[in-house]
Amino acid sequence: MGVIIGFIIAVSCLLGSFYGMGGHLGAIWQPFEFLIIGGVAFGAFVIANPAKVVRDSGRALVDALVGRVPSHADHLGLLRLLYALMRELRAKPRNEVEQHLENPAQSEIFKAFPSVTRDPGLTTFICDYARLILIGNARPHEIEALMDEEIGTHRRDRLKVYSSLMTVAEGLPALGIVAAVLGIVKAMGALDQSPALLGSLIGAALIGTFTGIFVSYGIVSPLAHKVKATRESQWRAYIIVKQTLLAYMNGALPQIAVEHGRKAISSAERPTIDEVENATTSGGSRGETAQREREAA
Image 1 (cartoon, rainbow, N blue to C red):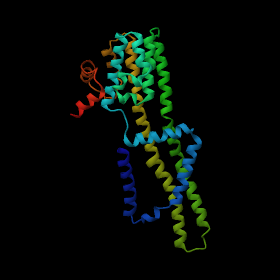
Image 2 (cartoon, rainbow, N blue to C red):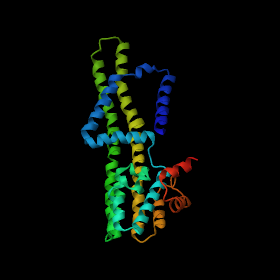
Image 3 (cartoon, helix red, strand yellow):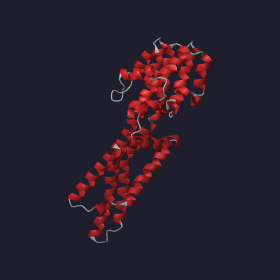
Image 4 (tube, one colour):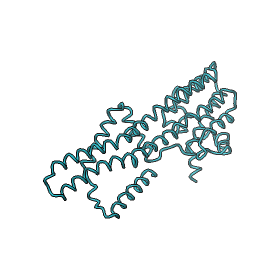
């Protein structure tokens, strides 16, 4: 919602000021200038990026527009899942715990927390390292190094969209100049026409330069930074899992281990220690739905 509101403010101030200075809004509407800039920018984006990044860009933009980031309840649900899983690792035989890790879609533990399982990458990350803990002969510092490598790879993959959008933003002013040059070329063919017609053609050409600069600095670049902030908020869940499981591997009790994970949550969304304790020790066996119902009430 913030992205849409910001866009409305920017465009309203731009057009309103132009109109207030006595400008004619119709002069800004130059669809072929827009088509040149937008079409070349999108074509260059497709050329520069693999199909996977192009498809992921759509998801990233939707997430940024709707503000799809983990909430307070999502973080609490993740900590509750980790707590329940560590309890299983601590108390149950290996064959029973493996059933949860090999098929999380059918696991009662994982099914109770849909906010976690709707991210397949995060679910796989949890299961992979819980399985290494279950094997029992892995050293914590080796697991930490492996986690850091995987998290770094995941972060780079998730931020490719940001890098690609910033590259487009950097190129848009130049593409605006390209559109303006083509407009000037068209105007040169009308030198024998009236000054009024010639002036309108030159003005239309200059709209290309204006559009390239405005779209670059006023739309694409801020949107790219919004994508980056959104992706980094989503990526933070991996750090929470890492801190929690490493603490458990180093001998911490499940309740202490989730406190390590809680500290990795942004202060704006971090549940209090009492909330985590109540949700795990008192309500750890209940699902995420019950927790959401209590919050709604």
